[in-house]
Image (cartoon, rainbow, N blue to C red; front, side, top):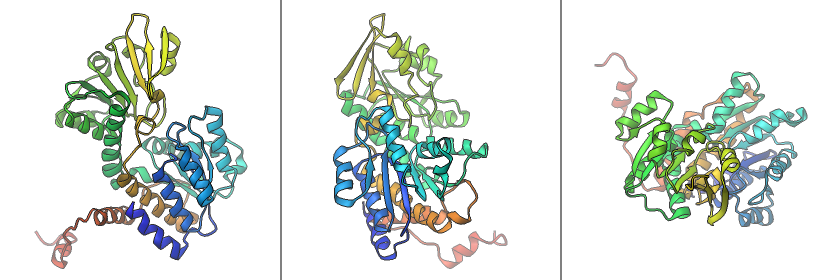
Length: 394
């Protein structure tokens, strides 16, 4: 992760985070560990909780605690009560800044004891789902401090969401099931940047890809990109593999389960485990065979059909695979580190609300990644710059 390494070297010299306490709810993986080490190098005191109990790597949690002194509150497979307790433990430190992955920390700060908010100067949000929730809070004037929408930066959308989620989700499908995608019908629910990446890579492996959407502009884009676009009610009967990536709830429900093929595979790459209605499946199936393969549960329906659910309906790319490749997370977490530094410098002058990542940070991330890849680009000369900023020249 060369971009993070370069930031770490500068942080060690300049100590831009000295005296700050940071609470983070992130996936406890090697890539996240590198981010924690960089922030610590900048002088921060760190308290890390898991963003998903199925993505937590216990050896990484122990290494961060024992080798680096990072306070880690996470355990793989933790139940809901334990998971919430870990979030509370991270917040109990009294953070100045929060790093969030799905708005869990911010939500608990605003719904828990009011004293928790004391001293919180700002935060960063890493996911599409989290940004949606934050904007809803801001619209209701409920958000009490400024938050940078790291996920919405152009480099995050085009690089991490599309290429990282696309590759890691297909990787998870193959690892969990060993299914041959070629010749299968893959239904992708949602054609945002994550959905685009999944659809592209499934098609690249020979799958026939169907896209479902509620946004007419995205549906049109999918159609013009060569994908079939159908309502889920129709796609449900055709699909062999379903991947939800909408950030919403109730995307696959009883009406869809009723017409699915025997052995249809259901996976979710949205942040929360609400996109597939597992509560209905559990309540109405005849039997559940857990762990027929690692991260694969088989639900037997009354008519004899079996539906295969991956990773308990949670983020499949992290639970059944390893998430984004390090090259992708290098850019994402370099953005997080630079945004934390920016907040440390500017949060005191910002009103509560959701803020875009400063363009200079986004451009700098692209330059760091290009340098890491050994790619050089052209530069505008003086005449070209003048032409682009003048209205007098035709």
